[in-house]
Amino acid sequence: AQKITQTQPGMFVQEKEAVTLDCTYDTSDPSYGLFWYKQPSSGEMIFLIYQGSYDQQNATEGRYSLNFQKARKSANLVISASQLGDSAMYFCAMTSRDSNYQLIWGAGTKLIIKP
Amino acid sequence: NAGVMQNPRHLVRRRGQEARLRCSPMKGHSHVYWYRQLPEEGLKFMVYLQKENIIDESGMPKERFSAEFPKEGPSILRIQQVVRGDSAAYFCASSRAQVTGELFFGEGSRLTVL
Image (cartoon, rainbow over all chains, first blue to last red; front, side):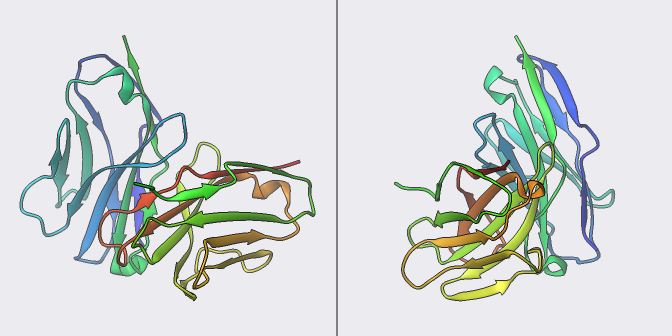
């Protein structure tokens, strides 16, 4: 069965510092996709970044990068130069053939950026 | 440039009443997904629909919950005889094709059962 684990329920980070949000996953399917979404206090889900299991390079999108370590089954999100607007819940999610390509979600990490 | 539209944003029901949540996917998207988010938790998949067809309802409770995506009009998630445990945020997402990439989410409908 597929599973996503986010071990950090909450994090406080100083503005302008880099942040690493942890995500580990479990699947027996060799083909899968990993996603990170941001959910601000307003409630909407905002797509941040995607990594395919066969992608050779780590995904990057602006200040977001995904530290993909396949052997460890981890897909940590790195946010460089954090901003106050980065304060939100962050969810890691996975899709694979095992899950019939439906997204399996982690419990989320609440990130608070301190000024 | 309308994204995924969900309404109502907030819905209050008493136990035993019915709740209807609507979702209009992004233009050009024919795949719709419903997720439920309980407080302080991640999203849980409920159902995946294409126009007029339920493709996967493995996450949907067997009783009281139903979903449809008619040929014309929005997708509807219907909860009959609501109970307090149904209180949650219900998110709809759409995609152009089956999920192997980005999902576009609505802002969610928050159901409170008194």
